[in-house]
View: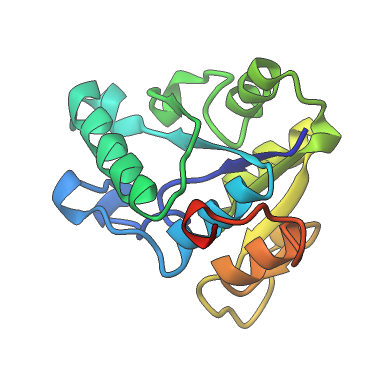
Length: 185
């Protein structure tokens, strides 16, 4: 089993004001969609785990969140990619739930749904709390260092670092492991 759990905000798409990305502002990070397609061709199950405290605050509703994910899925499909499942925590930080990252609950739910053991899971993101949740469950950690930083943050020190989506996809799906894309046949 090869299971990747991505963070959405700041990793798959650029971060918006107050970490909220409206449908009109959703845009994938450079190379993200093609990298996910490469992971899919390499036999990876790709999922998302995202904190969405705006739901708990009433800043937006689940219909707006679903619209963003539907747009994301359409753009992924256009390049032959897919995210199989989106898991989200609707709670605000003060609610003390077990699913809000950096708690591992959301990621444990994903691993359980797929029947994956922690050593089969790769948690991929650029934010400390996403990787901390993966570390708490014993997953492999992949830090997408999409923004240059002078010093490696403490939470990222145990993670493999990748400077781009392409570098990550090439590391997880080396040449020859990916099945040919339908357009290449």
